Amino acid sequence: QVQLVESGGGVVQPGRSLRLTCAASGFTFSNYDMHWVRQAPGKGLEWVAVISYDGSNKYYADSVKGPFTISRDNSKNTLYLQMSSLRGEDTAVYYCAKAMTTVTSSLGYWGQGTLVTVSS
Amino acid sequence: QTVVTQEPSFSVSPGGTVTLTCGLSSGSVSTSYYPSWYQQTPGQAPRTLIYTTNTRSSGVPDRFSGSILGNKAALTITGAQADDESDYYCVLYMGGGIWVFGGGTKLTVL
Image (cartoon, rainbow over all chains, first blue to last red):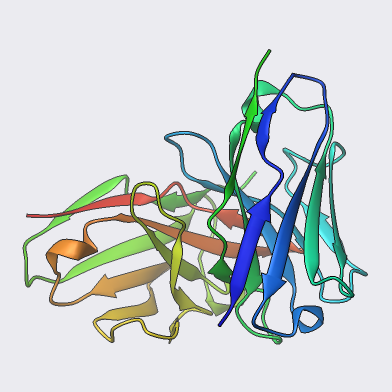
């Protein structure tokens, strides 16, 4: 069955960088677009970024464009989110999500999330 | 910037029917926005209910259905149960690779 396991979260100081990882299994990773979504404490879901199945296309929410970079390694079935110049507003649980099908990029299966806390 | 709108809260009686909506601050939602719906309980990851307007995700009971109603996407729950009490989020595809979530609806079953 589909499994997505995020890691790399933790407490980081403002202005520092952090890389999140999402390990995928149970499906052919290289066939699906992948997303990152975040949720600040007590707030709603915010779409962060998407990367196409082959890594050739990447799109970002305006709120993270520039400091955040999405990438993937299809040989390792792994999705990444490199976050730099972190601010308090980036404090959130970060989820990776697999597109529902190979035809649509609609978000489908979700990981359990990893918490990033930006604080001095 | 276009905002995706959802009712902040809604209440339904057990066994009742409720329709949650997902709109745009400017314009109408159509199937071209590929609306999807997600259910989330506190402390848990979201669960996909509906994608591409009206396709149910695997394992989702058929009492959850998606549609376009007027100028909004809609999620209808028929025969509401106590464990349907959750937060519900919609997301819309805005084009250019960009997706935007609504603010979510807190559904109370009582």
